[in-house]
Length: 156
Image (cartoon, rainbow, N blue to C red):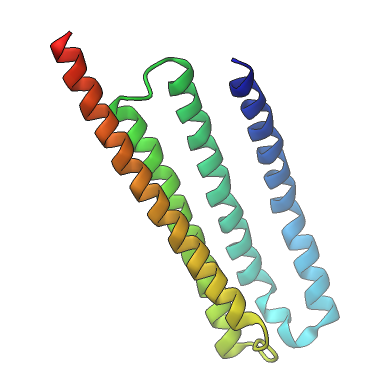
């Protein structure tokens, strides 16, 4: 299927891009620490948080790859698929908490961390929560489809 192959190409490009981003985060963070010595002590913890955030995205992309493999194999409506949806949901929740934690820290402890940071925090929480809830709903739909498929298999 053409769409499946194209999606795999996009997933590979995204994974390679995220690896590059993980390599570049410490480089750019150290430049910020050099330019703004008053926040240099945050270079390492914020870099670690950014790398973990990107890692969550990478794990989610790999879970999408596995779900795509299940679709290609014609076995998406099995309990195995639920595990991968759970992985995506967990990655989104962890990424949202990491981002929110950094933004809350910036609001409270970083000099000059106010300004639009509150709006970034609100957007982070709203977007992250919306995505996690969407994945919970999608998991419920998949569970219903699995139950219907099982029932149909018993009838046939």
